[in-house]
Image (tube, rainbow, N blue to C red):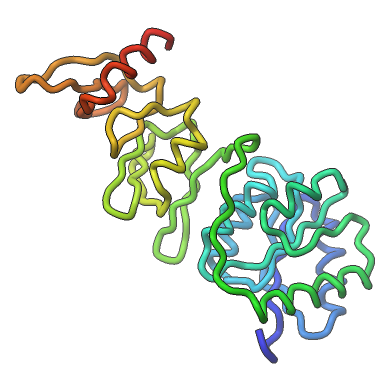
Length: 249
């Protein structure tokens, strides 16, 4: 960050809390508040638009909470430094699992905020590009995040019909169309294996989408989808397991 002011985004669902944090931040030297957001969805869009150096992130927010927001932010480049700010201290371990640099408990004191800002400066000055954290099986994401020419789209997991790998991307086919994400099919299967079933080395399908399996004219097995225009090919190695899975749906 150098001599440039630290660009900070405030994400909190309580307007009074945002107002108080803004006033405290503006009282600190070398800080610029570039945006505010009232929930995780808005925070992700604001980060994509404003590219803050740091996000002061509440954990308990409606919709996408702060912990899930932080996991999506780990995919951003450049990635803003996360400092959680919450009324509850029981989230501390999960916060640091989400690669937060600090954790502030409300009501935040000015000297504690100053210490957090200094910690962020130190971290940002010496950090190297980090790998995204491994998915926490106990806290599955509720959305996937697709980057779109400087913006993003959040796709609810429940709206996804199937996931298909194409080179280094995965195509997310969902109720409103399709989007590309830079995640591996293997990692997605590990995180969402209770919701999706593998039908091919390059394809996972939502369990509720498969209507039937049928033979094509050339003898291959195909999966007919509830909302698909065309059936999808099922690989030979997946057929037996898939038939067994469908018996229990």
